[in-house]
Amino acid sequence: MTIRRNPCCCVVCGGGLKKNGTTSAGKIRWRCRVCGASSSKSRPDRSRAAEFHWFLGWVLSKRSQQEIAPVSGRTFRRRTQWCWNVEPSIPATGEVYSWVQLDGMYLDSWCCLIGISPIGVIGWQWCDREKRVAWELLLRSIPAPSAVVCDGGTGLLAAIRSVWPQTAVQRCLVHVERDVVTHLTRHPKTEAGKALLDLGRRLPRVRDVAMAVQWVVDLQAWHTLYRQLVVEKTYRRVTEEQDIPAYVKPHQTWWYTHARLRRAYLLMQRLQQAGHLFTFLDPSLEELGLPSTTNKIEGGVNRQLRLLLDHHRGMPDLHQKRAVEWWLWHQWVDHPEPSTLIHDEHITPPPPQPSEPQDPNDWTTHTSAEEGLWTRKGWAGRSNT
Image (tube, rainbow, N blue to C red; front, side, top):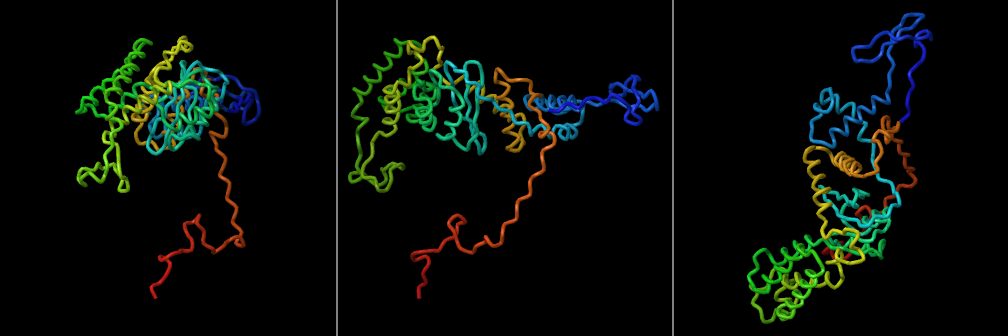
């Protein structure tokens, strides 16, 4: 922000000034040696910095506006309205991190993709949902780490294979356990389901290589014992209509009898074959301190952001996004003084440019699919005569 220097002479006659006490607000009063006019110097840069300090103190806490600033709530909102124009961002530093945790947090109709390292937040990306192209935008701003911990979304895994092909993947074991419980429920009725649920619940408690090896052996033993249940099929021609599961489509002639059991087993079996379950026990990554869950980002970032927005209920979407950005920016270890991000265009935004009128010669009356209008074909466009 441009700093306006205090005047060195009288604004009335141009004479020299001398100090003459202070005003009721605590500012130094100046008196002209020639004409005797009294004035006080202003520092708009310091005033804006103070307003910005009020703004961040309110946005990043659960205190009210009256508790933050010695003014009324209406005055606070009027004087800090320009602060919403300041948009923080984390520049690409090129620093290579030992490991990175990635996760997306949904808030109403938008999603924030977040990346953190062992030392704090390193980037974020706004999108409508967790899709590959959005994850790739975030990953390209971060150098490829040795390992990444994630919840295993298909868009994220596709982006990692594309942008970070040499990076090892550690699936969050807590998320795997939750997926197994979702498939089997908390109280499966069959012995096979109970045994498989026990395997899923043991995953987050694996701490060393011996426990991991024993878990893999137990999973293979389960498959040997209950393999017939995994591949068993039911055919429509020999099934009563009322006994057909709701998920079976009308054109299906057969389906897996124990579909939920099969999904839970294949989930763990495929992750184990891909090497995504026990990456944190890899001897080559042992010195990294790689976690086996995304608890650091789930509880340390996502949970705190939801509490922050809960403290400021009623804000419009744009203000909610800006509050999230400021909280994430403050978790960046190398963030500078916030007031250094203030520029003149934030305080006085340029007026919007008027749109150019369209040339009437370019207008057309033809229908187009882009406008939802087209010539109807088939019986819908014919008459019965």
